[in-house]
Every structure is written in structure tokens, then in C-alpha cells.
Length: 112
Image (cartoon, rainbow, N blue to C red; front, side, top):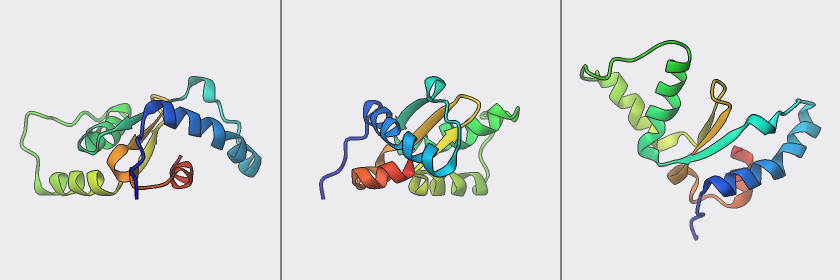
């Protein structure tokens, strides 16, 4: 199977296609004008998604101290299994490129 080339432009296009269906199914008032989206390499997933979410809530992990085993395990799991996330503080959808690259467009629409 050919891998998708996951780009920010593709994500924006698919969000535009999916949004009306989400509104119809849920009744949510989606505000897409301030929404951004970005494809991340998987080695940035832990930093951008989990640590980014913690920083948005005022928790600032100390990067100068060595990480304990559970943090390293969590990073490994995050990088290998998270498809994407919504960062409410930044109004941004993040998609982990390698974790969805073997999907087809319909699968990616479901993730979004």
C-alpha cells in the first residue's frame, strides 16, 4: 500500500470536508476560522502533544533533570500509538505523520 504524504495542506483540506458532517451529526458549533493543524514527525509527538498540554495547564516539566523510566515509557508509547490530538490552548489539531501515513484518506478523515 502506498503511504499518504501527510502535509498541513492535506489536513486543512480534509478538515474542511469533514467539518460539515461533524456539525450535522453532533450539532456542535465548530469555529474553524481560528483552528490550525499541523503534521508532526513521531519523534516530536510526546513533546508537542503531552508536554505541550501540560505547559498549557501551567505545569512546566524540568528538562534539565534526567527522565525517569515511566516518562521514557510514556514517550515510547506516545510516539508509537498516538494518531493525533487537539490542543485547546492553541486551537490546533496535531497529527502524527508516521502513525497515520499507512492509512487511506477515509481513515485520516476519521482521525480528524
